[in-house]
Length: 179
Ligand code: URA
Image 1: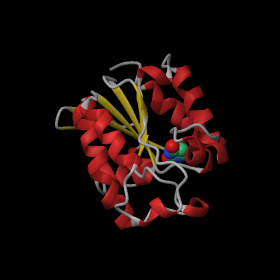
Image 2 (image 1 turned 180 degrees about the vertical axis):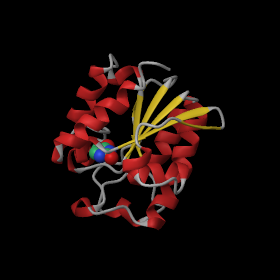
Image 3 (image 1 turned 90 degrees about the horizontal axis):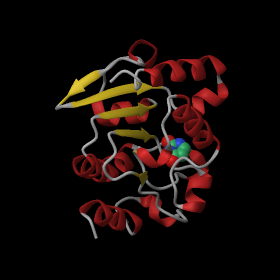
C-alpha cells in the first residue's frame, strides 16, 4: 500500500470528529496519485456520502464539465475536499471538524506533490491559505506559496445557483491552460 493509500485507509475509519457517527462513507478523494493539478472543495454532499466518491452529485457534474472545458479528465487530476464526511443536512463545516480533518489534506498534498491547487470556495481557500481577502477580489489570481501555485475560485455549487458565477469559474479555470 502506498503512503497515499495508507492516508485514505485512515480517513475511511477516522473518528476524530463527530461526523463519523452520521456518515455512510468517508470520502478521501480520488484521481491520479501523481497529479499535477489538485482540486479542493468544501465537504461531501449526500451523493458523495452514499458512494464514498468526491464530487459525484450535481456540483460534481459541473466540476467534471468545467474540467472538460479546459481539456482535463477527472482521472488525470486529484479531487478532494476539506472535510471527508458529510455534514448532516449539508450544514457548514465547523471549525473543530476542519481542524480534525486538515492533517489528512496536508499529507495528501505532501504525497501527491501537485504543482497547482485549485481552491473551490471560501472554506477551501480559508483552510489552505488563511484570510487572503474577499473571493470577488481574489478569484482567478495565482498565489504562489512554497513552490505550489494556488488558484482560488468559487465553489461549483455556487456556479449552479448563479450563472454569473459559473462564468467566473470558467474564466478562472482557463488560467490552468497557461501554466
Ligand atoms: N462539494 C464538495 O465540496 N465536495 C464534494 O465532494 C462534493 C460537493
